[in-house]
Length: 153
Image (cartoon, rainbow, N blue to C red):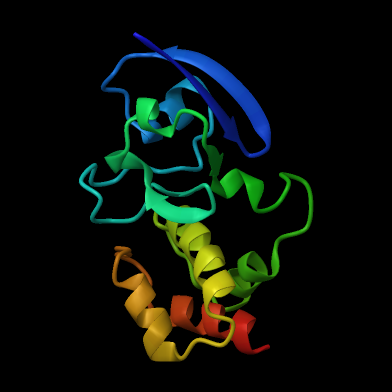
């Protein structure tokens, strides 16, 4: 067992974890942050994307012991439960960029990071960013539209 100290969504936690506990399971099982979804458990689908020290990463590919001393941001941090949606979340709603919603948290977290890096991305650049996220419902066009709308007003 190892002791891990991590800041998640602005709150500091100190937990004792097994060496093989995944960050995705730590977030969901230990902290109750179920917005981080687990799909493929191989880093392919992107549903488990969180930000680790500001960078979008797959939480199913990281062990909790690897993030000791780090800061994690999950989809729960984007907007308060009863508060207004972020501009990106609102654009997803307006553009019907989600259907079942399983992939949406990972895409939102990744898109927030992407838009910080690329202030004015093209549709092609947005599509390339989305290539690491599997969505079986939308066909991606509404997701690209929503992200493009936020980037270009």
